[in-house]
Image (tube, rainbow, N blue to C red; front, side, top):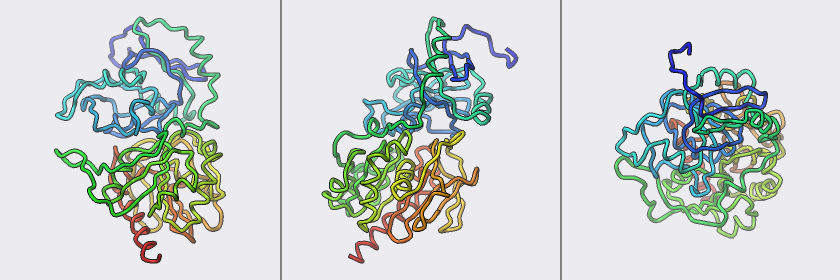
Length: 392
């Protein structure tokens, strides 16, 4: 090959819906997985990325070439229900998976991918694949791994071409907890792990559409007892827990599909005066509940180096992103104000109600992985709660 790599019989294929076939070496689980191909520009945190429920039915291309040196461990999972393995269905790496070299590692990445059922491939030009996604958009595809290198390429092409994709697909129910539970684990501390938050000062009800653990940990770190309810929870279900604040979580799929059952609940809760905060899918669902619209993005935002401007402070922060749908700012009603925008493409990244303590952001202020520039949003949420308590 022109880049100096030794040519080997391919044991993995990525087959796009347009018929493009990319060859590589298999890793992780064997078999096939259907999904939408995206790229992630983060330099760290591959385990958190792959276990983020927002990546359900997606195949993640890592632009950083060397993946695996941190190994794997049980502390860096982000999905609430690991046994369901809700997250990315496939992973694509430039180089072969690195051997673990980290004191926190309890196993190698390849073994972890196998155990989780994630089909992976290595040895491909991820820069070229990233450029293809930028030019043509996130493609529907099949990723296949067979150690014998035997594939029915025509059948794989047909599967990729026939898959309807993420538009119109509600995945939140599959990613969410099935019943109410309580979260009290706090943020991670160096060489100490995750601490319990002790005696909580607040009750937060989180509607789970595919929540990440670190979001809940940061709220717990602010002194909250977090009650997690399923995606299909009603306003009465939420209010029965007497919340000081309400949280709308991140999650996968098309927000317009999830809104079919979520909008009424969110709309009713936004009228109660109880402070409400949404992240990612929760942001999109809030916009839909308030009368706005969402749209499918060309290449999406996936990475830990995205610049976003907060109009309320005038500051630019570097944030983590993971979304393929966005709020259409032109559809927002008069009582909704835009608070954040992406400086990459000008897309909407935040809204707030002008007449109620309700706001949301498209990015991931909890990071995990990524920068901590946006942690202040959790303090903003609890500041609204304190103000609401004083006014009551």
